[in-house]
Length: 383
Image (cartoon, rainbow, N blue to C red; front, side, top):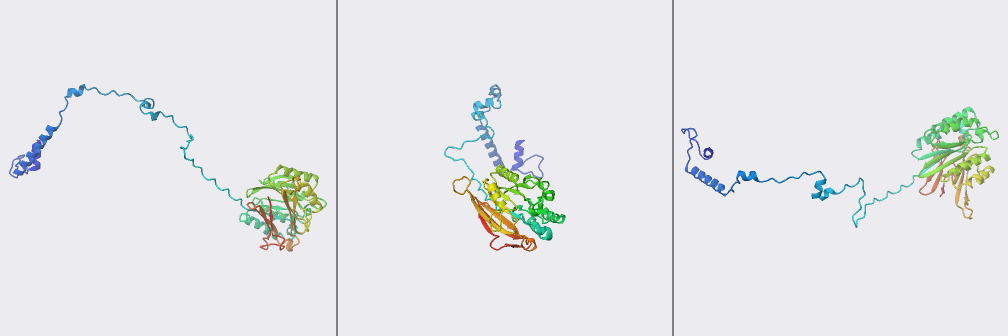
């Protein structure tokens, strides 16, 4: 049958031939003969096959069962190595220093600004729109100017009428929940001789500020209080005491300052400096009994007397005859200007990287700097 198939490859069937009869020409016969000779040669060269019996009698190799890690470890030692503990430190190869990333550069402390108002009594009495413009400017610009706090050194109102208190609350109320601020009572808020804190305490007492995160604590319903502010990598404490400072109040101030010795302290009083830069009678007492004993006091701000002034006192803290700190004391009261002060407030821009404070006066009402040329802009250095 195989031959017939081969014939079919090389021959051709004729029309009159019987079925499956193949007629081959000379060339086809030669091809067939060569092919048969090649097949015979290949068959002669092939090795003899082993007898079936020999194959059946050959024993098969014995296969030894392999347990996952125990038996294989004998032949494959690497598999027997104990696993590394999670997060195990790997010692660097000899001569190779381990990679140590460069420390991130310490960012420079960002400058920040403290705003300061005083003696707004004429705004509350006669020019409430100016008062509103001042506080509205703080609301709108505190982020742009990085104003982190606003301090107030007394005489919020003039005669203490309900209308004046409402005008003051409308203006200062704009800051609530927006910009931290603190106030104290001046003589016009409580009466020079009466020292009646009831109206002030009702509107600007501990109940108004007690829930604020910056509010540190109160003395006699905010007759005195302190605020804690952090900005520019600095920690500050503002300590206030209103009109009618007595021995108990001074003792309270010292207790607060001693409780926060690491914070740069700013004391806030109403009556402290005269316009010639001298201490008033009360100011001298406060300097000797609150400023000198507390090493962290660096600034004192005040109002009351119409005008501006400043002084710097060197304090020898350790008694060795060499000054250890400079205390800057500043008066700013613009109520003698038109419309109760023309809307001027003080701006103290702290630059921690340079260790200095840039002081200026700005009026949102007039949209201009410097109320009194040459006296409103200056720079103070601090440690």
